[in-house]
Every structure is written in C-alpha cells, then in structure tokens.
Amino acid sequence: MSFRLGVLASGRGSNFLAILRSIEKGELDAELCILISDCEQAPALEIARQRSIPAKYIRYSKKDRQVFEREAAVQLENYACDFVILAGFMRLVTPWLIQRFSRRILNIHPSLLPAFKGLKAQAQALAYGVKISGCTVHIVNEELDGGPIIAQKAVEVRSDDTLESLSARILVEEHHLYPKAIRHYGEKLLKSQVMA
Ligand code: GRF
Image 1 (cartoon, protein in one colour):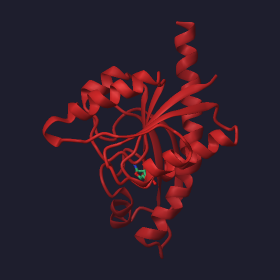
Image 2: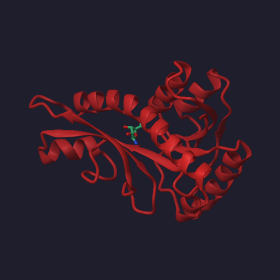
Image 3: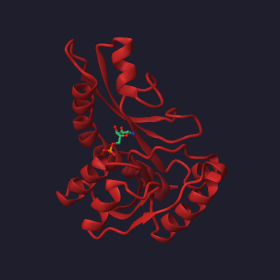
Image 4: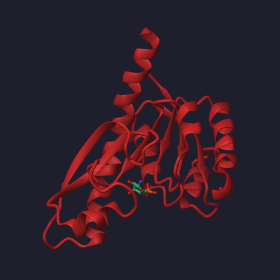
C-alpha cells in the first residue's frame, strides 16, 4: 500500500530526510510529493530541491494564518497527498486545515506526551528531572500536541545529560520512529477506508 506524503517543515529537516531515506531503502512504501515551508531559508527546502522533490515556500502571516493554510491545502490537494506530515513545523495548525485533512495530519514531538507539550520539550524534561523522556508521533487535533498517540519511544535521561546530548539521543529515535509510525498508521487508516 503506497502513500502520497506532503511534508510541512520550518527548519533543518532531519526528520524529513529520515523519511526520505526510509523510502529510498524500501522500508516505507511512499512518495514524498511536496515539501512546504513557512521559512524561506529552511534547510529542509534545500534537501528537497537536491532530491528533485517539489519544494515550496509559502509566506506565513500570524494576522491571517489561513492565507498560508489555504495555499498549502491547494498544493497538498494538487499533489493528491494522502497524509500531511509535520516535521519540525513550528506553527499552530488551525481547525480549518485539521478538518480538511481529518485524521490525516501527523506530528512528531520530542517528549513522551502528554508530558512536556509545546516548545523546548527536551529542556522541560531536564528541568523537571524526569529519568525517562523520548518522542511521540501523534495525530494532529485542535489541542496543541494533544491528538491521539500513534507511537512512542522512550529514551533514558542520564545524570550527566546536557540539553544537547539528550536532544541528540531523542532525535536519533525520532528518525527511526517517524517512518515506522507513518507506515503503520497509514496502512491502518487506508485499509479501514477501503473496507468502509
Ligand atoms: C524535532 O525535534 C521534532 O520532534 C520537533 O521539531 C524538531 C524538528 O527537527 N517537532 P528537524 O527539522 O526534523 O531536524
């Protein structure tokens, strides 16, 4: 079962690259149809261009978030994307886009949700003093980092961890978890639609 993926990313794009590599290795049967960024300088755009994946910058205005989302939706629908993959997309998604791609927008977050929602999750985990953190892939709903959980991976927090060392170990796990979670969830959802 092959999926068509559209990715939204604001920054360095390491999760995007991990998904791409997983597809190249034949572990994830999917096509990366388009990479959209709200940040013109995002390295993720460059990664896409180097691999000849359509890459589009769309200006984001906090005053009217839907200008970005309407344009993004047009692109995602033009490419017939089955799923919208948030990979370091640093904007809140509005109910409008969530309804338009109902149960088909996924996100990865660098903590074991529901702990440490929002920004700087790894720093929050260190400050709280938890001994285990990790990463979570979830369906995006209207609550920030609050949608149904698809997959999680725990990472031990060591007594000598710094923000950098913990973030780096969590990131390694993100790169394994996200492609697997997309495959499992995608197969489940598309099968249920075929059978409905
Ligand atoms: C990751 O830590 C992800 O969990 C969070 O934003 C970061 C994006 O990193 N949502 P990258 O752009 O995929 O390298």
